[in-house]
Image (cartoon, rainbow, N blue to C red; front, side, top):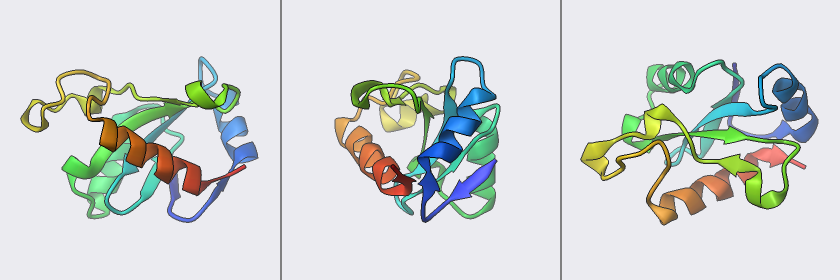
Length: 113
């Protein structure tokens, strides 16, 4: 697991993705603190790490990063931790378009391409 609050290189993500089935890197993004944790077997482990570091669960969202994918498919918004009925999110996807846009901005800021 790697905590990312400044930058991570694209080549680091590629190495991480080679260890996961499907060529992905799991990540949990804190949309308030603008940081993320990457490279764990489960989003829940990354979420727990950030909660232990003081993040609020309402600010944490699970994504998958596909380093070999095109720009449109680079980020997949799919995680069991995203199911939050009390916030109006009833699926593994993220229904709020503004939250998705914020995540894209944060991820692009944190990944050095």
